Image 1: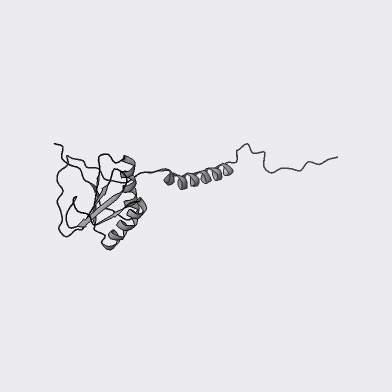
Image 2: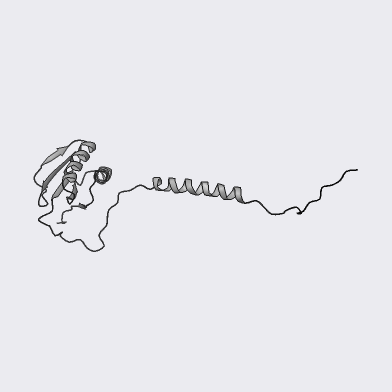
Length: 148
């Protein structure tokens, strides 16, 4: 005759959720790691009021970067916003980024202004802004002319 072992506890009708919690935590970590990689853009602060002439701080170094229609870059370095003179130039985006990063590394308070030819592509202007941001530029402004 077979003797049944006596159970102290009856059968449990509960679902074991521990493996599901582990899977959920793994997915959470994956999303937390990949989410910052999905965002792209150039961080700029847009004006909240009508634009006015900017006040120049005479102690601050100003670099005026010009983007040509054909894609080249040239800039002037000085104590004021100067769109006529030229201190240096670069043909490629990488050359411009390296040279401007060197200038900004020497003086961290350098204010950079970008002016672009009206026929310059939007992509080349945004690429220049992104390169400047990667080169360590934290103060960036855009130069426009008053419509006539």
